[in-house]
Amino acid sequence: MISELTLNNFRCFNSLKIKLSPGVNFFYGKNASGKTSILEAIHLCSSGKSFKSSNLQSLISLNKEAFNIKGYDNERGYTLSVTKEQTKSIRILLNNSKTTTSKLIREFPSTAIHNNTFSFADASPDFRRKLLDRALFVSDSNFSELWFGYHRALKQRNSILKTGSSSNIEPWEQKLSELGGILDHRRIDFFNLTMVELRDLINKLDDSDSTEYLKNIDIDIFSGWDKEYSLADTLLNNRSVDLRRKSTSAGPHKADIKFLINSIDAKQILSRGEQKLFSILWCCAQHEVLRKSHNINASLVIDDIKSELDDHTFEVFLNLLNLLNNQVIFSCIDDHFSSKIESDFNDFKKFHVEQLR
Image 1 (tube, rainbow, N blue to C red):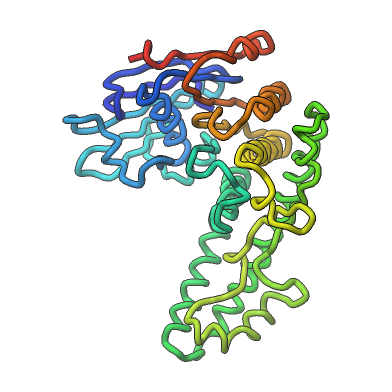
Image 2 (cartoon, rainbow, N blue to C red):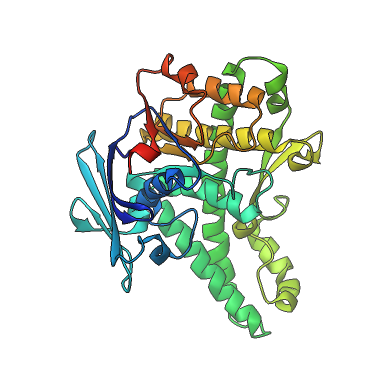
């Protein structure tokens, strides 16, 4: 996890250096004061990407040539440097050696919840797949090779389908079936572990009307094809349909996590605040799996925590903080509630962002 963070020419910060707690970190300040920028920089340290912009050049401070973010993990003695120049690709150094974003994800894992992705129930299947796969990239050093191998085979099958002929398609279907089966098993195993931790967290929360809905959410993983048939048979049976569509219609690349209440899509029943709290719980459950099963401490980054949460739901979030063992970093416009947190945590730090600039 990030223990110290230094920003140079990053968005509104010409220069900033802060020390983070391994527990709860709270940033507050007015709109446009830089709260989200700090959280964005922390997440960038774990992914090489921004959760706000696909154009990293736009993160460079006005009239500057480059931004630099430095992170330090004092527990392991790891140093990290992320640099983006106006006309060059992003440059990432881990312990002064060049590294890749896939390595970054494993060494400084974090999950970000922000206003564009606060509801996993309302998100796309692709987003939910990526959330599960990201945890597997972190926990399993062989998962990257498996994932990319499957998608290379998928690309080859789709290329053949686009020709309008099934000539030479069998070897790629065999590869898809082989790698897809392994990929599916890895996902299901991690999903099942996450479900155990999720139910445990929900049961430990204060039992009240404001949390009862959490116990009524049915969650299941859809592998991407009808499991009454093997993936190999599915690919063969779908071949004529796929030729017309010119793409592969079934397989792990179509997997999803379903959230239902009384067989109805949960997003149609839950309020936006309830969806956001559930999303936070799901991330926390995944992080508990990483911590307990793989000895990996991942950080949870939540931008604008009070957005969408009413007072009762926010109280549940505060109760949840007492159950967590990982680093949590979140922001809010005002500081009217930090007194409720400070008394409960030794590892609590708050930052008034306007005083940092």
